[in-house]
Image 1: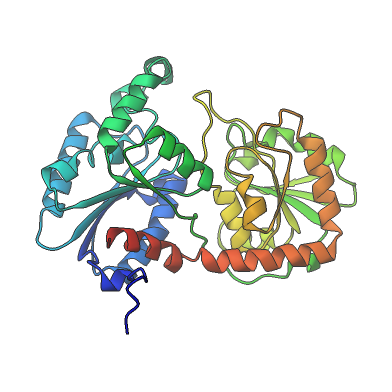
Image 2: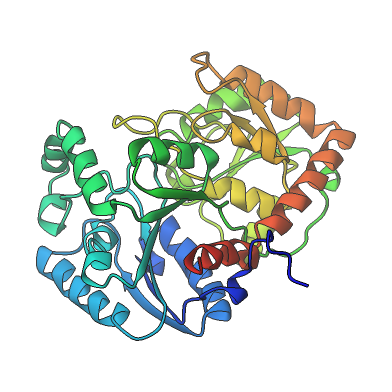
Length: 376
């Protein structure tokens, strides 16, 4: 007998027969890579997936945006249940405008979006190819016009459903977009080869990721000085090859494939010394660096900046300080990393926690949560 109080599964509801997916292409950075994995799994769950993949932010003209909008309207205006889903991040007018108001033209479509940089949806809604040619002009328009930008975003989003990849991000979207329905889903974690358990790896601390403002790479020399000389410090990620050399620090540059496996297999913990990254205000994105660490079952030591504080509750991480802590985090982070490196019991416990998190955030589980929402 069916329990009438039990929420029906997606297969028992009106599952989409087609999903129209609008996202950056692979070469467009982190969201592009995420989109590759997302749509690969989506095709395993939905037979008819129509992709509109576009270059990175600031590459499209107004005419290009209009053509994509018309093509999307044609793709969603078909018989049967259809979902339209967009990946939206800072400056991503290439997804934002072509999916705007589609649900008004085709009321039967379920229109949703993943917001990667909440509480803003696009942050720079006028950053077409012309404006992107001048960084100064872009910020001169958008920074003083932040209230107008948020009003534009509210108008475009309306009562659509949005997904945020962190709890803090979801809360910020609910405040900024009271008419919208906001769901939290975690950032998916890729399948990676099994490597040595953290406590059996070399006595080393790692730093990983794209070199960018607020990522903490400017603190490498201070972290090196704070760690015991017997503990290695290894740094990898796109852009790290251009960092100035620091004695006692192994800088590896961008890594892929088996080289990336080897990097994570050579560190016991990953340090995440993030801080403020933008003048536009607080942002609550998910950390792709943390997702890599989870995939390789590598415990993290992190600041509580933005949504990073959530990792303490998720499991597998040591979070130092609080979200509003203005104190210099480097001494405490370095001390916490050094303590963890030689604490086998604690490393084992954190790895056990990460194992649970990794299973929960598999591409199949995460994408299924989207399909559930589209099927309501």
